[in-house]
Length: 356
Image 1 (cartoon, rainbow, N blue to C red):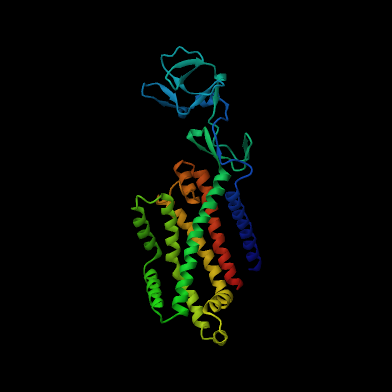
Image 2 (image 1 turned 45 degrees about the horizontal axis):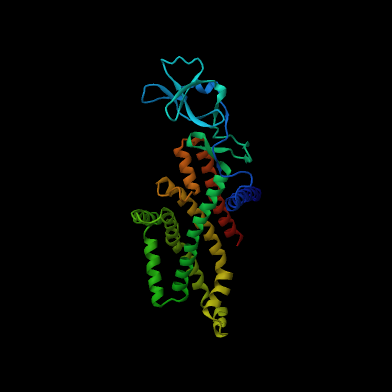
């Protein structure tokens, strides 16, 4: 049993290190590559590409035209390949943006559609450990590692918003109900906590999403931020109840009475003694739990299409990968990363709970 615990601890240490690395790359940037790989990088045309049925689509004139754009010669004019039944061209027929048609050699054509690139590939001044993602039909790309680290960083920031409201309201409600019991603020806090508890968090979040979603004048980034802030608020009773239970056990203890007789203020008694020495382990455990749930919230918001490109979180990255049709590659990989990071947070919370 002890060996299994050590193995799982080592795995979680590795995962935590991976998460920290991705977070730092998102904060300071990827030193190996830029995030956006601009057009301009080309490769030779492969004759096999032109023989593929998926290479062509029928245009409004009834001719077949290449789906992607290509570059002609060194001036990099954008052209498309053309296939006409009445053509007299013995080489390759191309169509320019202005509609003119020419018959040229394949050597005069450059292929800018190099993305997506495989793992451990490189472009000019960039090294792509995890390859690239194709945008604009492949003539532009995004470095996968840079995109992933940026998404992890943004998801962490939004999760910290949930954590902040969770801690502020959780501790405030607990002190109001537990330490200052009998006051008006105590009754109001107790009413709020009970109202949050009598309705499932899922229902509260659905109501929040509907109300905020109808606010058309609100910036999309602010909408996502408010979702996470309210999630922390609705989750706060879980922390409040645990701290209230601890305060009720301690507030009539001899050392608390002695501290009051010595003239210590309520602030010093609460912060320096109650929260610091007796409630801190509970707070740390709950912090890990709410961060993990905030990661799940991010995935859920993107699934119901309530997140957007302005947030650029891990959930949005997964949603975009799915809509681009990269389910077998990007989406599976990202889901693995997301759930592994989430369960790592759950593990450390449970580990710390057993430790104390």
